[in-house]
Length: 172
Image (cartoon, helix red, strand yellow):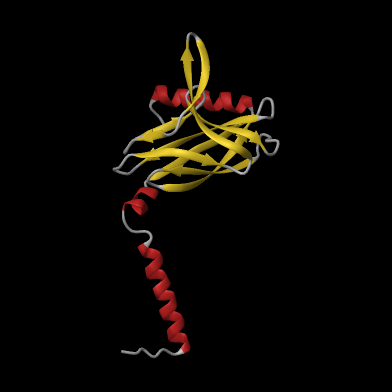
């Protein structure tokens, strides 16, 4: 069997084939999970000493399957690690963790005093107001891009206070 196509027909056929192949890559669990994660409230703390900074955000999993945040990369840091702040004998310290579980139907908030992303070996000086691009890597959803705004320490205190007020009053 042979198919004969004119120039216009072959272009349309090629575009249709490309669309079908592209849609095939979006089917299945992975595509459904990607759209079920929402990243919000991303910010980076202004570095105090200029060598490292912390990134915070909220991940909401609107899907019906658990996911895990497994890693982060950003052009502003040579190393980005997932950390958790723990209390040890009355002293606070950070521990590196391999992943953070994002349960189905729940929110996980990375915030001062808890989970956060440590940006180490900063490549540039980060100033309040700067936009920081990062790629979050999830077990199921794959890579998700996020843009965080650098905040001064005073702005972070305001954000933390507002988040506490919302939690006490039950507002988002």
